[in-house]
Amino acid sequence: MPPPEPAPAQRPSPTRARVAVVGGGPAGMVLGLLLARGGIETVVLEKHADFLRDFRGDTVHASTLALLDELGLATAFAALPHRLLDRAEIRLDAGTVRLSNLGASLPGRHRGIALVPQWDFLEMLATAAEREPAFTLVRSAEAVDLMHDAGRVAGVRWLDRSSGRPEDSAEPRALEADLVVACDGRWSSVRAAAGLEPRSYGAPMDVWWFSVPRRDGDPEGGIGRVSRGGFMIMIDRGQYWQCGYVIPKGADEELRTSGLAAFRARIASLQPWLADRLGEHPSSMDEVKLLDVRVERLPRWHEDGLLLIGDAAHPMSPLGGVGINLAIQDAVATARIVGTAMRRAPGPVGRDVLAEVQRRRLWPTALVQAAQRAGHATVVRGALRGRVGAGSRVPLPLRLLMRFPVLQRIPARVVGIGPRPEHAPSWARRLEPLR
Image 1: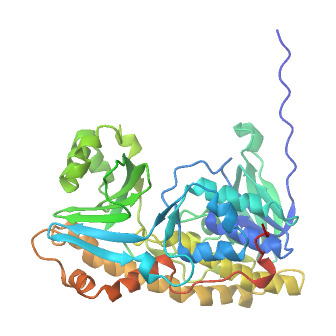
Image 2 (image 1 turned 90 degrees about the horizontal axis):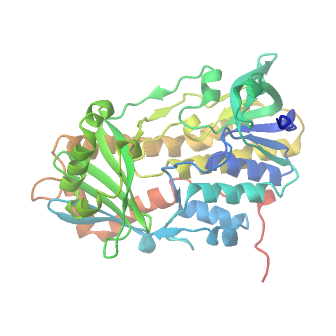
Image 3 (image 1 turned 30 degrees about the vertical axis):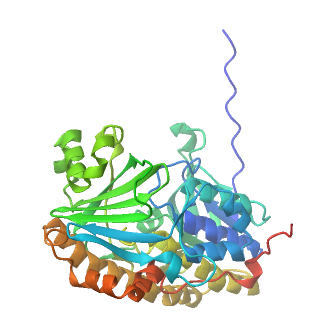
């Protein structure tokens, strides 16, 4: 009998950082990179072993592309597989309406939204961050609780899931920090550990996400399709369409019982030109993923020693596809405000500094969420009830977009740039190497 394999060596764990970032998504990785470039010792805890997961948000907006230019990462990004989305349209029974022309409407160098596999984007950010001596990324690290000292948050307790064996991760490890930043999304474990409850604004819909093969001759760009009782968004990913089919809130379980054939019939009736390929993919209802849509916002994004940003502070609707962009802008504002304060003095930052982040990012968030709620109340509810999209007459707001193309600049700017774009602090910027 061969001798038993030795147990894997336990990896060294960081025990202290100035900033502990929970969540290695776009906001967490951007924040970690920026802070580390400022010489601020930062540890990012990412609960998964890698970034190879099924992301729905694979968009890199024009304002983020400008940020990558500032960080000297334009060349690295250009090497990633990506596709540029420069237009969006909606197809009604009465005809097709162009919603925005990003290529003609956006200012600056970047005039579109890049569609890139999010795992590639995150690995690019991780590679850049790991060049900085002050940065540490710990994968398979699941945050489970907060540490406190004299009433303030003083760190994170986390489980090491790297071995894949439950017995190896039974005892939480401790990471002390002057500041904990929650970037762990709409189901934030940090938010739950802090006992913070967001205010919910409700949503009339959930979304089924799936993909369908794309063929030569198909339309290009982003397409919305609205007809009687049906509403679907399609994003051109080159080899396939990433599709989001809107269903009534809470209807997932009931609709799934109808089976795959009913699902295919529903999609084919909405987009008949997809009918001949629905037999290829999705091949089962397991490949149709549910997004539980929520529009929420914390009244206060911070406690003493704790800051929440992105979806941890304000879960967004997928309407407009702006959630990732807002989260990254939150991260940049955090780096500039909090990072600058930390570079000036050692130790924790005051609550007034954390409050400044919320003050700066609150109105852009509230504005976008208000627009999403208005879209829910009009377009989404109307589509689900068969009042929008069906019939021979284009709704008035869309007729205005057709008649006055200059109005297309409004949705183009809101989606492509956002209401308050942020720029990297000077101490985090890098010039591209000369060739």
